[in-house]
Image 1 (tube, rainbow, N blue to C red):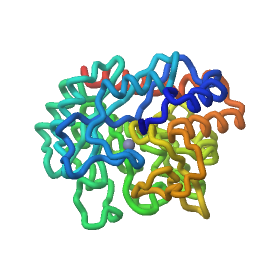
Image 2 (cartoon, helix red, strand yellow):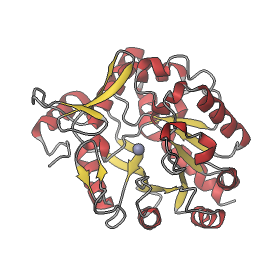
Image 3 (cartoon, helix red, strand yellow):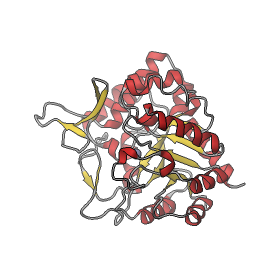
Length: 340
Ligand SMILES: [Zn+2]
C-alpha cells in the first residue's frame, strides 16, 4: 500500500511520539483533491507523488483521514484534479453530490475554456460548491510558466465569486511563484477589485523554500480577504516565517491529500527545492539506492508546523485556529454570504 498512514507501524510511532500531544481534537484539512472513476483518461492517470492513481474517492478519503489523525474529528475542503484531458464536469458533479457542508466542503474546478458564466453561477448558487479552483494548466498555454493570474480567473468568473462572497483556491503560476512581481500585483488587484471574494493562496504561493517567502508577504498580508494554506510545505523555516509575518486568523492547515499521503519529503538545496521520494516522480529526485525509510509528506508537514509553533512559543489558541477554527469560520462566512 502506497499510502503512509498509521496502518504502517512506523507511522503510528511518529504519530504517538511526535504528533498526538500536539494536534487539537478537531482537524479541518483545507486542501484535498478527490476524483471519481471515469474522470481521468485510462492512459493518463494522476501521479500522487509517484504512485499513479485513476481515482481517489470520498470513501478512501474518509478512511485515510481517520488513519492519519487517529482519535480526531476530521473534515476537509475538497476539489477535483485539474487536468486538461480529464472530465472536469464529472469530477465537479461528484464533489457537489458528496459535500454536505458538515464533514466535506466542495469547490468547483474552473476551466476557462469549457465553462461559462451561466454554468458557474448555477453551480455556486446551489450552495453545494462554495467556490472555484482555477489552475495554471487550464489557459492551455504552450509554456505554463507564462500564465498570468487573470487568465486563470477572468472577470466574468470573479464577478460571480464576488457577488456570492465565494472562495477561490489559487495555485499561482510563473517560475518565480510568490516572488514574481506580476503575481504580486495581480494578487493585490484581485483581492482589491473583488473585496467579497475570499482568496486562498495555496501553498503560501508555492513558496516551498525560504528565499521565496522572505520579503514577499509584506504586500499581501494586509489584504483582509486573502488567506494562506500550508499544503505540502515541509520547511519549518518557511512556516515559521509565515507564522511570524501573517495575521494568525488567515492561516489555514491543508495537506494536498492524496499527494501528501505518499512517502517523501520536500527539501531545500541552494535556494531551490525538490521532492525526494522512494519512487521516481516527475517532480522529484528519487532514492534509487533505497537508503532511506520515508514517512508521508503529510507527517513531514506536521513536524515542520510543530517545530515552528514551538520555536515561536505559540499557544493552544493558535493551534486550534490553524487546524480548525480559522477554516471553519471562513467556510461559514461563505455560506452566510451565498444566502443573501
Ligand atoms: Zn493541490
